[in-house]
Amino acid sequence: MSVPDTSHARPGAGSDTTPVWVRNPALVFGLAAGVFLAGLGLVAGRPELAVVALPALVTAGFGARGRRSGLGIGGGAPVRTTTELAPSDSGRGVGYRTEVAATDPAEAVAVEFRVAGDRRHVVVVDARTATRLSGTVPVTHSGPQEILRTHVSLLGPGGTALSAPAAGPVASAVVPPPHLPVQHLPMPHRVTGISGAHDSARPGDGGEFRDVAAFTPGDRLRRIDWRRTARRAERPGDLYVRRTFATADTLVVLVVDGRDDLGPDVTRWSGARHGAHETTSLDLAREAALSLATAYIGAGDRVGFRALGGAARSVEPGGGTRYLERLRSTIATVTPTGDADGPARMPLVPAASLVVVLSTFLDDQPATMATTWAATGHRVVAVDVLPTPDLRRASKHERLAFRLLALEREDRLAEMTATGVERISWQRDDGSSPAVQLRLLSRPRRAG
Image (cartoon, rainbow, N blue to C red):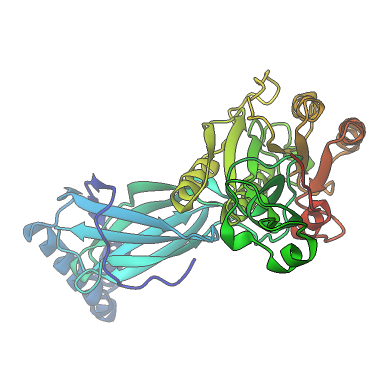
């Protein structure tokens, strides 16, 4: 969490809380000590003890004036606290702006920030100079999540009274996933469309050289190859033109399995809350989906989105900058539904599309769907988003259960690969980046 500054906050969601003023415990203890010393000096005949007790009694007298000046014990005027969040495009942090408006007389405002992961930070500022705070909260996970929770406490004039910490607004945000730059991308078995960045098998404009053929009605005059015409023409009027391949775009459908969200610690796979600083399977799935969507749309292709379970909605294929922003917000909302073992309906995908399935493949449903799509003529790429398992906290029985689960998963992946589904891992133990793995799958394809 960065050091707060005093930049101005824009209006945002907030809450009103009524402070409950109480006497400062230090003042109460000082008063008790003064009375005790004064009494002891009276009983023991030691006037110097009464002199020592005088400062504590004077301070207590100033504290009593707080009641007469309107700052008494009990409720005070409401305190308005507003917090605004601004997630960054990188997905690595969320900026916040918090403003505290207190009408009660106070010398200082103590704001306690409880950020993601239950970490606590207390900031004390002078109420007369600055009640606007801003900074950045680092985040590990993408998607919807609670970012900041505030508690506000006021310090009365002279420090004689303070208010109990009052809960302020709870700020939540949908953190967009980061994306990796990807240059080499796998293509489907057949490209479609009438324009794009990829060569097709149809003759047309914009692609690579195809052949030289006799001029026919409809050919453009600028395509006439005069050298070939001079060499091959047998009679006057014969013309020959250079033909090229037509260009087309790629249709890609991203299928994200959002039924579960698993971290590296296998002891938490049974449903316990994962660690705040652990990258989970859905974090990798969101990152992979956005990285591929950004790369394909940047190349002029069309990308669609399908959710296999989870809370996100499907998005029909499209392209362009505005569509990418819509796709980014949809991918960021992928969250588990809590029913990882429930049946999932097989999404419909357009013909001649490249299907990318992003899942942990811990059950048969995503693998069966990928195999079915491959059998119907689609090129299917399976992206394994399971984090590297961590067994350091696992017991003997948990290690045995994980071993059985891992063997079933490897058999499932092997059977899926044998049917023609190509597989990559978004997080590998050998350090191989996803871009390198995608480059191995990106080979020129040209079909009708």
